[in-house]
Length: 439
Image 1 (spheres, rainbow, N blue to C red):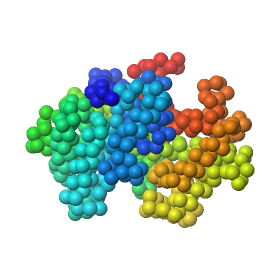
Image 2 (cartoon, one colour):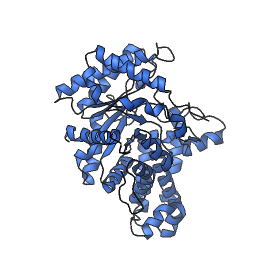
Image 3 (cartoon, one colour):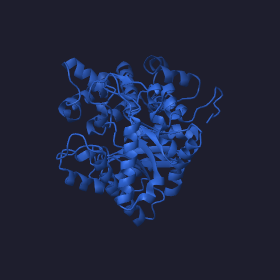
Image 4 (cartoon, rainbow, N blue to C red):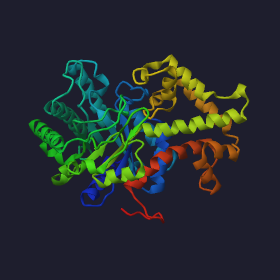
C-alpha cells in the first residue's frame, strides 16, 4: 500500500469539504471480517475509498479481545480487499481511541507506557489516521481530566507517532484526530433521554490546549495534519434507545472550525441515525462519521434470520443452533455484558440478543460460536427457498427478485450489513434519483 496515496483520499475529502463541497467519509470501526467485506463491497460499488479503523480494545500490541495485533488486522483487511479485487491504495487504515483506554484501571504511568507502545505498533504497521485519545481517567487520576492534561498526554503520543513515522519512511502520510469530550467507545453504558452537544467554548479550549501542548514538544508544525476534532453533536445510543441529531442545537458549535483551514469535526456513536440526520451531520461539518456496533447489529440480524430459516428446513440433529450457542457462551463468559445489561432475567436476555449497544459483538471470535456460524452457512449453501427469504430477509428477497442479489447465504449476510452502510454512503456522497452523484 502507498501510505501517501491512502492519506491523500482522506485529505482530498477534507479539502473538498472545507472548500464548501458538503462531502464526507464514514469510518467503519469493526474487526469482523464480514463487516469489513461488506464495507469494501459498498466502496467498490460507490467507486470510493474505504476507511477502516481498528479500536484499541479490539486490536492492540497484546492482541485485544480479537486476538489481533495491528499487523494482523492490517493483513486481514488487505486480504479481504485482494480477494474482492479492491485496490489496496483505496484502503485507508485508522486507529480509534488510541491511548490509555485499555488500561484505565492501572496507574497513569503504567497506562501511558502501554499507550506509547500501542501508538508505535499502529504507526509501524502502516495506519495513517491516528486518533489520539487520552480523554479517559486512569486509576490515580481525578474523575474528570483537565484539558491541559489530556492535551499533554496526546502530545506525548504524537511525538511517538511522528518519531515512528520518520523511522519507517516519513510522517507526511500521518493525520491525527484529537478531542477531550470523546464519547465512550461502543455507545453509552447508561440509559439516555438526551445528550447535550459540546459547547463552542469547550471546543475552543480543546483546540487551544492541544495547539499549545504540541508546540511545547516542538511539534507545532504538525498542526496542518490534525484532520479532525471529536466533539459531541448530540447523538448517542444506549441499549434500547437512539438519540437523534438535532441540528438546531449545534448552530454555534459548527462555526468553531471556520478559522481552521484543515480541520473538520468527527462524530462518534452515529450508529442507527437515519439517513437525513447523517446527511445533516455532514452538511454541518461532521465530515467524518464513525459507525461500529450498528454494523455488527445488522450482521447479527442476518445470522439470526438465517438461523430461523435453518430451523424450518434442516433436521434438528444437523442444525447449527447458532442462537442457542451464542446464548450459552454469553452466560458462561459474562464479562463483556454483565456490567452493562441490568433488570430482570428476561430483560437481560433481550439485551444480550438484541441490544443496540450489541455487546454480543465481543463474542463472534469465540471458537464455538464461529463453528456454529460456519455450520449454519454450510447447511444453507445448497439453497434457500425464496418464500423463506421473503419471510425473514424481505429487503434481500426484493433484490433477489430484481436480479441484483444472489440467494447464497453469505451474499445475504453481506447485503444485510450493507443496508446499515447505505445511509452513510448516501449521506457522504449524495446522489439524485438517477444515481448521479450530487456532491
